[in-house]
Image 1: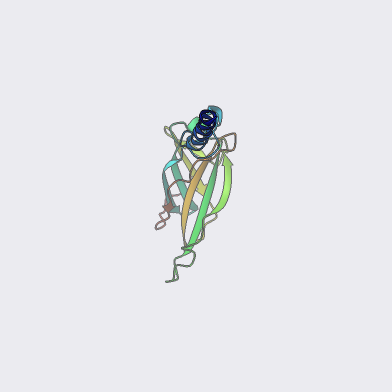
Image 2 (image 1 turned 120 degrees about the horizontal axis):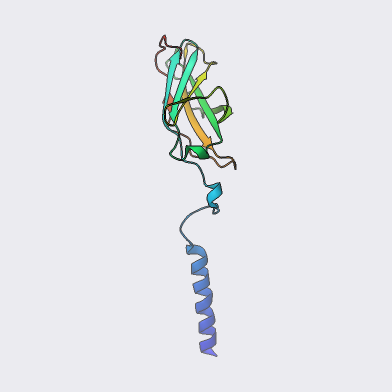
Length: 153
């Protein structure tokens, strides 16, 4: 009798260990066709006369990207206390990859002109790439606008 209860206890403990150890990844498993796209790289923001030009590089698997979320946060550069510095970036807009406002540049490069910024403000941008299934990459590193240039590309 003792041997049977010992085996049962051992099986229960082994089953519990397997249940909690698993593969080590957190979250629900995703089939390959729904894999999360890689983040965009090399995001740059340049103030120009007509707004802010954003440029970024698509990930290696750039054909997986179906739309882009463009996030923006603004700062008032006229104040010393940096109003807006600790605020979260807000979604400025979402653009599908075939949107005519997105201009392809070279191998994997993308350009977008944000026409809405005010001249006396500084802006921080981030880009999130999403696939057709709605799974999105991590946000890109921040790009912050600098001084305005006369180029309007």
